[in-house]
Amino acid sequence: MAKHKYIETPAKLWEYFIQYKNHVKANPRKKHVFVGKDGASEYEKLEVPLTIEGFEMYCFDNGWITDLGDYFKDKDGRYSEYAPICSRIKKSIRADQIEGGLVGQYNSSITQRLNGLTDKTEATLEVKDYKVSLKL
Image 1: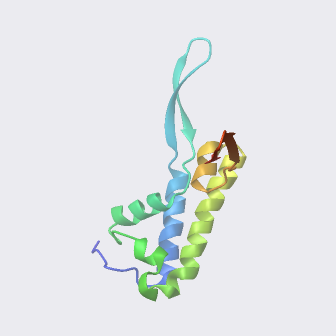
Image 2: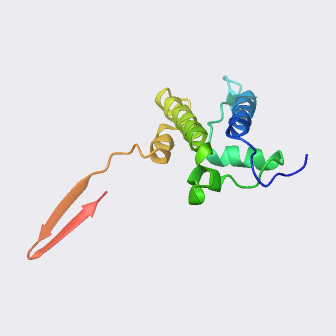
Image 3: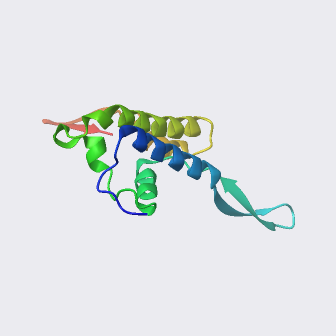
């Protein structure tokens, strides 16, 4: 397949994302496990979460485009017609990660960090005439 310098239309970008999503969900990772009292060697299927990086690599591997950064950043306003699709792709990926973390399908602590869902606390420690603030 010939490499394109750009994705022709926002609809084409969405089509590529749907292909990526279907590919990822149809191809789980396999974890080697030992089951039962005899420790039978088996493979447990693990669903793979959607990621922007995974989508970008899928597009690259299929020869469609090598970098999606400009589309998602809307560099110089040149990709403004792609903004609604890029936003929908980001939200679809985030929803997959968050929902998977909530039901225990994916590691919830990693899901929280990737999506900025961690709690932040602030502690103040005073020593004599010095005041130190720590943000955790």
